[in-house]
Image (cartoon, rainbow, N blue to C red; front, side, top):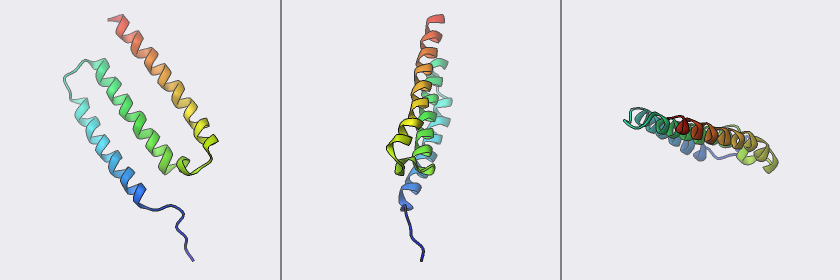
Length: 93
């Protein structure tokens, strides 16, 4: 007897969301804005896509909350580093 632990619908929705965000990234890469702003937008989209992949395809959404904290801490550190680098980049110009 086959049991379905997780419904397929969220996976399809996440797939569509990832495909749409990839299209947005392609569009954002061609925008005529300051390069630092473009990089900030693209890194934000990439971080959001990575979190969707981790939550759904790596099943962190269905695991214990402690694993989400352990997985989220490096993302928080990366965000802090990104903000510091962006501030430094703006101050150099």
